[in-house]
Image 1 (spheres, rainbow, N blue to C red):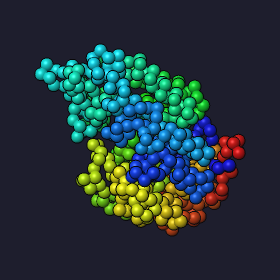
Image 2 (image 1 turned 120 degrees about the horizontal axis):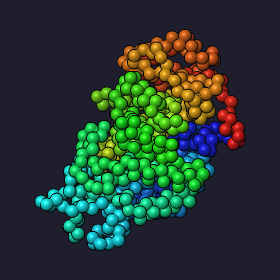
Image 3 (image 1 turned 90 degrees about the vertical axis):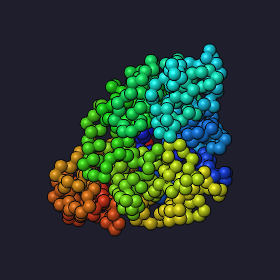
Length: 552
Ligand code: GLC
């Protein structure tokens, strides 16, 4: 039996991995990734042995029929597969093959808006009295013909969140591109339609959903010019706000629906940087989202105090029984290696990304990885003539780097986004056998986590008395303990032996380090280089976790 989280706990104690289908693996030579391509790469993700990454679940970004104005986040049919990605049979094959490897699969649910080519919108815009008209958000022009209020799209390049539909002479609302009209969640027909969509995928066997724009889906019933004040700098402040009570009621109804099935979950994109509001999306009785994405690390400056505070705040505010989660990258943000690179110095960016990975995989909470993170992919350079995304996010979506062959082994054809020139050296094949590679570090950390209750489910306690540039903590379950120290500073730091013995780890210790050549038994004090992190744990192989014994 492969060690790993038990059923029921898989989304709490497992490691989740985001696949952006367009960019993972092309199987039919059209330059766009597809479902069969993902299936062919599942062994990299988890083949049941520590030679593979060892993740427990994948989140698939949208693969539904779409005109691709927002690369799939503009859905034209929620219950099918875009021919570019394959067929429903390919989806079933992927799901079956994933489940055989104990990999759970969650799919992206996009309820805030549809594509403007979705049949619902085609009907809605046909006339003012069409029965589907009220499925979207319409408003009359102001007296001078201007949009009804000053709400803005999330994308600065799009400008206003309103577009005039000339045929019916009303504006429709779009929080994102013009091709993504917002749905009207006050309409009961919309609610019923989405319940059917949820059931369609749950009945097919998916393990849950990532809910797009979960924090904004229900708009205020009455449109007004009010500008919501949120903790998000810049143009996003002017986005259409949510009716929060109604939004929470909607999330509760979806939770009840999920609870009718075994062992399913929902993680919401809650793009809010006010932690008190973020945790409200778990529900006051833990009856809304299973997990609300905590994006705080994406904005945290590189300092021990900033990272420590993100964790301390989340730990303090989470309602009883709610479970944390963390992430370093996704398809909407610059990749960690590039973000952490001071003055574009990718070598240091990678050193820091290794330390951030050690943190992510040892914190109390579900880690979400982004494809390519495990090999330290950086943002890919995009020449101006190859730019395709209106939101400026192409660099973090370049093809997965599998090997040194053409296009990084992603496709035999010219890919939809250029493969990074780094693909010839930064790739899975090159890192597989190198014990010092980023991939080997991720594998070691994930497989260590899989076998230790302290890391999977243990308590979290900050280590007091750490030097200012150091973030340190202890994880503990029963008699098993593990200690983590992360040096965010630019000078070496020494962790005295007493600190290690004081943490009660036992005396046979081993170290997993993000620096090269330091792995192995721990003896005496530990010196941490700048941007180096260590996990110190008992060197004895743990007993199989109780839940593993029960399963196996
Ligand atoms: C979410 C997605 C992003 C998309 C937007 C509109 O933020 O993560 O990629 O553009 O929603 O669907």
